Image 1 (cartoon, rainbow, N blue to C red):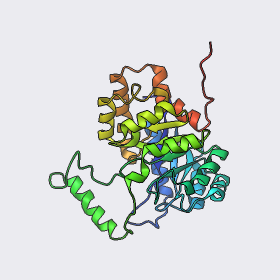
Image 2: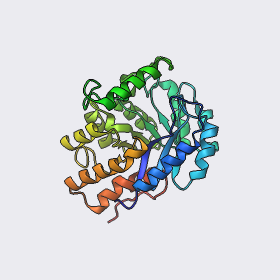
Image 3: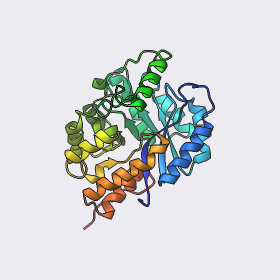
Image 4: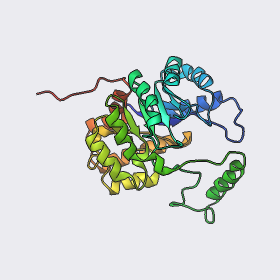
Length: 295
């Protein structure tokens, strides 16, 4: 197992059938699963539309300060610069954006990013299509009982939730290029290697923007594409990638094992592995001093 792992993409647990339930036991279970899997630090994406209040979330996360880095899930339509300062005062050390009403580089959103830059709060941006309970590239409810169960659960839950106004067009990696140019000291992470259809855009942005990284979460299909397209260490440099689980607690260990196997196939040395598992993310969040080559 890797010696140190920094997970930049872990979601605060929630019981969707009973959203009012106390989340503390689920957080404890997630923390235990993460530690068993070898996680050293993890960004806990907290609050927002479907999570606990920011105050309740940070109250629980304080009990796990050695493990979790609190990251606030925000809607830039509502969270302005003043609110970012308030979140930082509560104890949040980063932001996460997803499902925005307008493109990420919308001018009205820029004050939110400016405040994050001022406070040294990295921002994780979801990129591309938002996933769902069934990955139809792998399975289908007609031939898989687990997929059928997940599909039926989705149908029940969607009647309880408002219709989503989301678009992958608004969450393009090309928007990160705009933001990176405007805020050169803002640390930006794009999720899921950009997602399918966006890989080359991500490679281009990573190639030229010093303050943009991409996480490798997203599951089997994105992992396969990462290998087939040479996205790890070839199209996207080792120093520009970080790792995230973004999966159920019981799947974290398997997720780590798959990446270890991928790194073996790529014949990565110990230094490259440490960067992907730990150091890149640790530098982004201020746990390690950035390294610069010297003569």
